[in-house]
Image 1 (cartoon, one colour):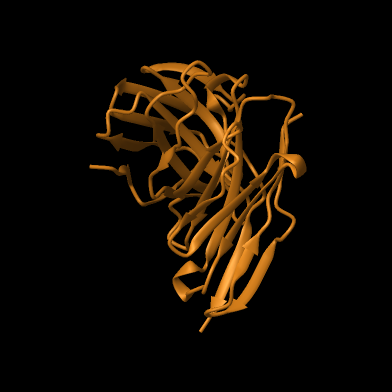
Image 2 (image 1 turned 90 degrees about the horizontal axis):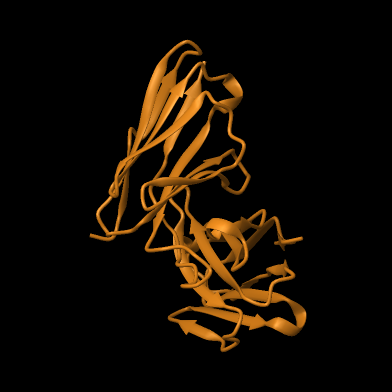
Length: 117
Length: 116
């Protein structure tokens, strides 16, 4: 199994809603990532989890709250979003991370296309 | 400062033509990693290749080939005999060994359109 799955594929929410995006991988990867991608732009890193601990938060607003319940799952909880948060949200995973062991390629899921009304 | 430049925003070719996508990077690290990803209209980024800074060997995989030249800080990607299925946005990315977390620095992407 070499894929990263994400649910839902599409999500429409109002600014007062609370929703969650889910990501799952069964490749035994120990690093997981959330990216945000606007149209015609490259992905922007939001969060990195390494061995289920948050290791990077790229100054993301608190209305985005990540959670890593176990080594296979990564969630992104959304609350009080703004219309400008509408984007494609991509999850990725990699075997390991760290300068001493080199950086492995990241495998991406298909993304959740989020629209905030 | 680290940076990846993909100067070609859009390229349009006719099927069976060869096409080269350019990637120029900037880094102060001596140990770094370069990647190419393909993003078809479906949205998923597909990993194509990883190259570390100590390995300047060119690579060929089917119709795809990569030319890594440290002297010019370039990591160009050539598709031979392009096909309509090659139509996608292609991203070049850099990861530095000293950079925490293996953060990927992406270029702006090149949108390739292959017409029948």
